[in-house]
Amino acid sequence: MTFEKEWAELRAAAAERGAMQINSAPAQGGGGSADLVVNRDDLGAIGNDAYELRTKLSKDGD
Image (cartoon, rainbow, N blue to C red):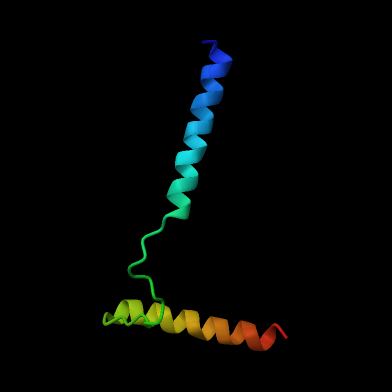
């Protein structure tokens, strides 16, 4: 077997494995319906600053 043929087969096999991994996500979890809640003041302050920035950008951006 030549190097080119072996390399082509290896690339094809790797591409098939990659496609199978992408196309077979687990069905559990990841509903996305829950809101994130933070109970630490420092993280809450960062979230508040981010929300205020987003609000200002949406108002001033129009």
